[in-house]
Amino acid sequence: MDFELSDELLALRDSVRKLAQDKIKPRAREIDESGEYPQDIFEAFRDADLLGLCIPEEYGGSGAGILGLTLAIEEVTKYSNVTGLMLLLTRLPTGPIMIAGSEEQKLKYLPSIADGSKRSAFGLSEPGGGSDVAGMQTRATPDPDVEGGWILNGTKCWISGVRQADWFTVFAKTGEPSSRLHDSITGFIIDANAPGVERPRFDKKMGVKGVDTGELVLNNVKIGPDDVIGAIGGFRLAMLGLNAMRPVVAARGIGLAEGALMYATEYVKNRPAFGSTIASMQGIQWEIAKLATEIEAARLLTYRAAWLADQGKFTKEYVPQLSMAKYYASEVGVKASGLALQLLGAAGYMEDHPTELWYRDAKQLTIVEGTSQVQLGLIAKGVLGHDLWWD
Image (cartoon, rainbow, N blue to C red; front, side, top):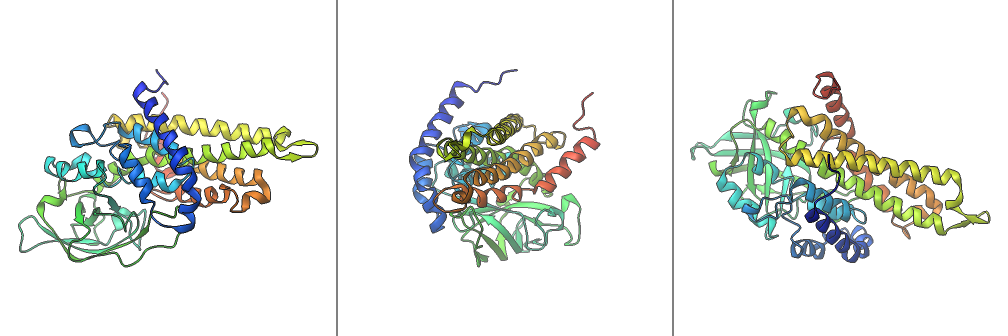
């Protein structure tokens, strides 16, 4: 058992760490205040070849895998969770294509994500149901004019990167609208400029500002047979894609937690109080120690989950380990943001410090791509079903 990162991954981590310190740290507050998409950061990611980390080399990526992407996201989210989301969006929409797409689809869509000439987004949630994937109402009906073609109607919501996307990975019902059978759902690739594709509304968010979230409305959008992902019946594909994403979301949690704790630790070391510093108080030291331990535990869960995903181990039997990483790391991110703010006291509540920004951003992580409660249910199901067992 080897807990050391390879030389290539260490070099990647160090280079991203420097980029984060030089380019992201000075911009984090401005990005939050303006809410504008940080194109300069996107271009920095492109120039550093970070947009294709999880994309195989034969499709223009660097082949660093989920673990490489996880390391990069951990580093950038020490300062801005927005930038972590930007990197995450190189994998979420492309995952189903990499898992089940045709060779033609991979050659058409993956290289342009890796080189930064195109951006994409992922549409699964709907206004009437976020986590209830089987209950989706977006409908795909056979196109009478094109053999193997489909016509899509419906609304997807809470899509990160919806304004910036050039194309979308979307899931829709191909069976009866009321059916909850897993084979009644299919994945599709939709051009953002196709007739009938509308983006009528963008959300006003509490945090993670800078990457737009909003609705995608589909009105009689025609999809050719070449843009159907895998075989008809895509519920399992959607779940496999999300399973593989658990460590990527978890990385945003541990990066935020690390950034918050490091900032708060430096503050209490230099903040005089009662003839000494806040850091000299045992109660403060114990809180720092407990949180540092939880961050390291979250990191181990996350790195293991990333390793599993890179081995193709994101099927049902590995769900507990993958969900543990996402659940625990995101909850640690929330805890760290709260403790950091508390350690700074009144100062932490003010925009003079990044603690209030971390506090707002952290909560999103317990909701996106499966809430903490959904993850707990998946973990429990795995234990009850002996997918996770100890003898």
